[in-house]
Image 1: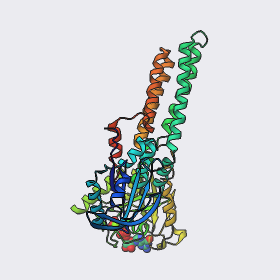
Image 2: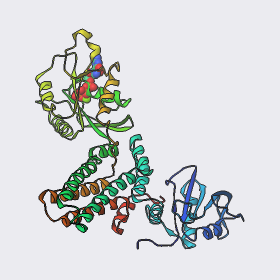
Image 3: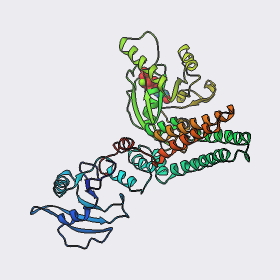
Image 4: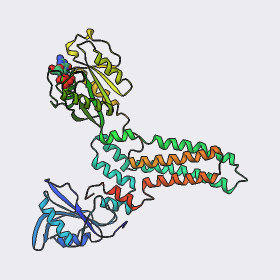
Length: 443
Ligand SMILES: Nc1nc2c(ncn2[C@@H]2O[C@H](COP(=O)(O)OP(=O)(O)OP(=O)(O)O)[C@@H](O)[C@H]2O)c(=O)[nH]1
Ligand SMILES: [Mg+2]
């Protein structure tokens, strides 16, 4: 069922130990259930916190602060009650069982937010942003979700929809008044505007940026054995994660760690030194290194500043030439500055002294500079925007070929339809199930 009007309850705080545990109740019976459990005889003025005890079947379950928030000024727009109990799961479990005995139903994941959407308090893109805020792992991801929560996606989609409606009005006018508006006029105007709007929708989508915001920028350190890859990883992480020795071929497995640069999560991978003629274990490590390089967003090619470049170095430089990369000459502490070999676009660092490491951080962060700046970042929204753009281009093609203008109208309607699924003006239950099931219980 799309909406049921029963009363739901769930823990709103994460399970485990903590200062307090909050149980949230939403629905028409919230007040009567609260009164049935709360010991103190208080008026429960809306949005006021009261002190008392939870008593059930002559048992004091816990000390408690309770609040009743009357509809419609609540998260779900229904009556909402919250019980602030002592942390830990014992009391919350007892109180939840009491609530179920009183007729409450255990809330599904995301059901509170689903009710907020179904009761018209927030649109679908904002409901999804709530989850984005909860699950963001970096500052920039959180900011993008907050922007979406404050309605950024909604207003972008609305303005595109307005434009589509005015295009459609133009087409209808041409259909209704053929003697006043020539097909020719209607076609040129529509074709041009449809292509401009399609471009705008496409450029609002940044799949790469969205992926980087969500899971981080994948940076792989690679190079010959002993050039200092593991030392650079440790310096960037600020901890001795990978083993460092002066024996070439120390690292075999991929060693990973994450940092935040400029509010973006950066996933660093240190890899086995690349060379020929090595033992079996090392060969497997080198295979893994090659795979990691192939899948990286950015490769950091590490070279030894204190040694002349070898054939292997030059091979690696050639191999990575056309992909996003940073060239690093490490161990500059071992060479007088004027003796350093000049290499185009290289960064000069010392993992040992820390010199130049800030420049390396900046260079890495630059590859994520645009992540999260585009209007759309949720993959569901981007798919729909691209679908709308495709329909707009079809409409433009219809005009270019001089086909029946009704055909263009069909595509414009389809584009409007796709956009209205972003904000949830048109949704079906399967989509809602899919979106809200990704939430946590209690939100
Ligand atoms: N002087 C100096 N020595 C460094 C620097 N960076 C690394 N080393 C030394 O170089 C040697 C190799 O360092 P690692 O970080 O293990 O090198 P690696 O590239 O990970 O080597 P493999 O795992 O064998 O591929 C160690 O003895 C380090 O102490 C540096 O900036 N300056
Ligand atoms: Mg190493």
